[in-house]
Length: 159
Image 1: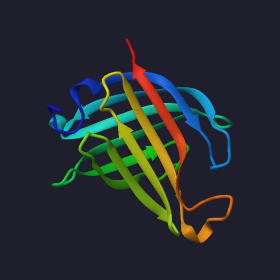
Image 2 (image 1 turned 120 degrees about the horizontal axis):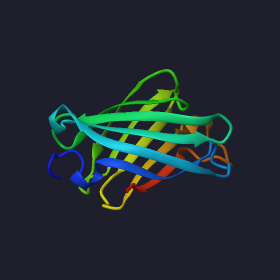
Image 3 (image 1 turned 90 degrees about the vertical axis):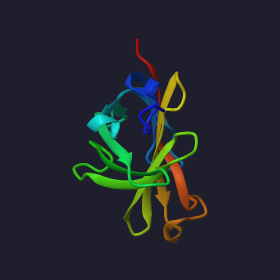
Image 4 (image 1 turned 135 degrees about the vertical axis):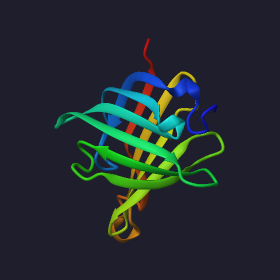
């Protein structure tokens, strides 16, 4: 990682598919997706702009801007998505693990949470996963407390 934030090979345009579901018991809806990973501010900031399609609400897009936030691989991110929390921009905090995978999240009300994981470590695949976190207070026998995948994007390098 020459810039310390994302691997050089991760920069550029990516295309692939996105899986989306609203609730844990819902089937995933598959649709095309695309994204572009870029560096800014002398490599101190990275942006990942992406597009995806909601099964009922159509074309959507989002932007994740992130950078190192002090020591110990701490990450801070600014995130907005035209469907997930429109129109509010969210500030997320998290970390980069020893392999370079970035995970950030936030609590958005009464114990509910959101986790975003960006994995740009492989040369041929970039993945973005978004998990909703169900608080124990609203869990049922059918829906467990904790994270479940809402959106999973797998992209490959465009030529």
